[in-house]
Length: 114
Image (tube, rainbow, N blue to C red):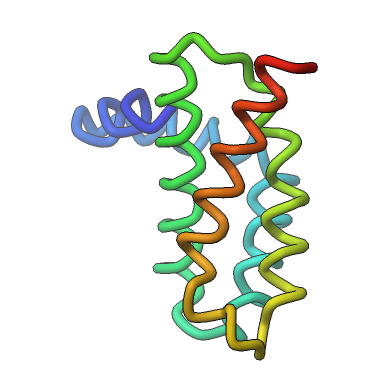
C-alpha cells in the first residue's frame, strides 16, 4: 500500500489520494484519535503520517513474504493496549523494541500455529 501511495503521490494523482482518504474516513479518524491520545496532541500530523506509513510498510512486507493479513489485524489492538498500559513506567523507553519484537513473535505464532 505504501508503494502504491508513493507512486500516486509522485505522479500527482490527487484524485486517487482524496478517494483513498474519503473511502477510509473511519480508519483515518480512529488513527487520528489514537495518535492524539498517545502523543498528548503534540505534532499530530507528523505522528499520524508516521503511524500510517509504518502500517502501510508492514502490510507491504507481509505481501512480499506472502504471509496472511490476519496477524496484522490481531496485533493492532495489542499494540494499542501495550502503548497505553506501559505509559509512565520504566519500560516506556524500550517501547518500540518491545512492540516490534512482540509483533513478529505473535505474527510467527499466529501464522504457523493457528
